[in-house]
Amino acid sequence: MAGIAVIGAGMGALAAAARLAVAGHRVTVYERTATYGGAVRRFERDGFGFDTGPALLPLPAVYRDLFVKTGKESLEDRVELVQVDPCARHVFADGTEVALPNASRAGVVAALDESLGGQAGQRWGDFLVRAREAWDRTRRPLLEEPLWPDWSVLAAREPYPAVPHKRLLRTRVAGTVAEIGAWELRDPRLAALVEGHALAYGLDPRVTPASAAVLPYMEHAFGMWYVRGGIRELARAVYERCVARRVEFVFGAEVVRVLEKDGRVAGVELADGTVREAEFVVAPGDGVGLPARADGEVALQRSLPSRVTVLLALRGGRPEGTAHRTVVHTPDRDGELASLFGTEPSVPALPTTTVLRPGDPALVPDSAHEAVTLGAVVPAGAEITEERVDALVSVAERAVPGLRDRILWREVRTPADIARETGAAGGSVPAPALAAAGGRLLHPANPTALQGLFTVGGWSHPGGGLPHAGMSGALVSGLIVEGPQFRGSQ
Image (cartoon, rainbow, N blue to C red; front, side):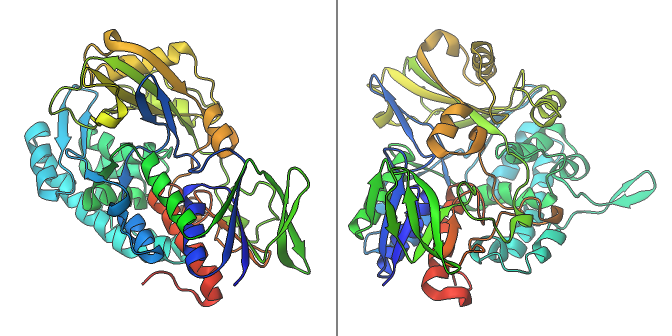
């Protein structure tokens, strides 16, 4: 039985802590803020409640596995999962709308054919078949196994089976998300649909590898889920599972240094000078205060964008049949990408905006009110002016007519808020790891150059997102419990 120090109480760290405690280790979590969950936070005011980080859960099997492996209660014993249907409503630049069913390829094909015509549904369905092949090729080595020293295989190989395309007497295949949209989907609305999945993670579709096709595939194959009461309830359930397995939590404790002795981790030093010994240390993967990484060449070398979130308390109830999630696509695609990914990034004038309308009685004071959340990608460190917030509300009115007149109050969550809560520079939000592109979108492996030190969470393998955080915790616990011979989940 080893003493293990876990730095931070994000979702990946909590997942690792619970699994390590069940394996018989003494686990202590040191969290610099006053609560758990990392980016999974909640804002409450006047009887309204809002998720301020992730709001929907893809691939819930990751957390179901966590609860099965750490105790007798299932995930559904601790939280209520609701499948979101339709999965999303999309409002395109030309005013066309479509509601896509959850986890139904046939339903999605039919909905797209009816709304867009021109066999759009069939083209999207064929794309999902190819995306599934990319998923099957990368799922295990990219998500379920540690990132081995031969990671360059993932970096060089493009797993997406692009369709040959004749262009100017040359045969070419799509190598990026944007090229999939232009050459294979051949409809600006379908292109917006596939590019939107990359953009939602702060990725530029013009350079993001075609392997990102796995992102829409995950959504359509496994569905999108809502946790009744908000995603914060998932964080609470995982935290309580840790406490039940006798994980010790020390809040308000900032770790400033990882200690080493004779080439091995020896413990951690807190901001107040206290030293805590440990045989293993599990740390966030952003590298703050950690020794140099031996595998730094596979880390993301650029700062990913951040998010702006606008929380709206509305008078008037949520109409029956309202979609939980609506994506309003920008009318100026080129302008949005130039703003976000140009040499001098700025907040787009008309950003692609996600509108969340949960319809959960737990989030409103009564049925005569509604809690709505608006979200958009913005540059890391961006200052969010009132003018930009007003523009976001205007974009959202394409999905919610009369929205502005219903607002009682609004609360804005900026990149600075994300930076304060998570410690990420500029409030950057990590993207999931993706294959190909020379390894540019892989994340550092969980083991480090210092023996006994492992990293967990969105800035380490396998990257950002709620499912990936849970996978990261499983990988780290497996490497500590089983050692270098660990080969991932079976």
